[in-house]
Image 1 (cartoon, rainbow, N blue to C red):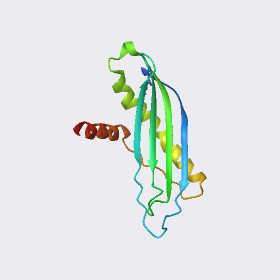
Image 2: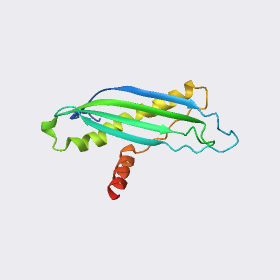
Image 3: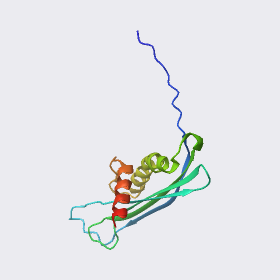
Length: 146
């Protein structure tokens, strides 16, 4: 018989909740319904250090363009989350915040987009699951190359 062991895996990163700062949905009156739709979300992230071990992380997604006939809607969602790091246990807090805090907030961002489109009485848009941290690393790499 196997004996279960419960591991105490306590994180040094504490998630102190999130708020929705902005929800914007607009139908595009220029949209031509016969065309195939290609959705290309644009993501943004801001990290603000509040004190020695507290951070505010803001993630944003913009989908669509009201000037294009090929986009059925325009969506902008901004969420911010508060995080705390036990700094005495970690040398590079910013690296931890960039990776873990962003990954923690992404499901809430996906859910907000899905709920917003569902409430608008159009087919629900569910953003795919992907590595948002790798996406931001790619953004940073491209920005540093310029």
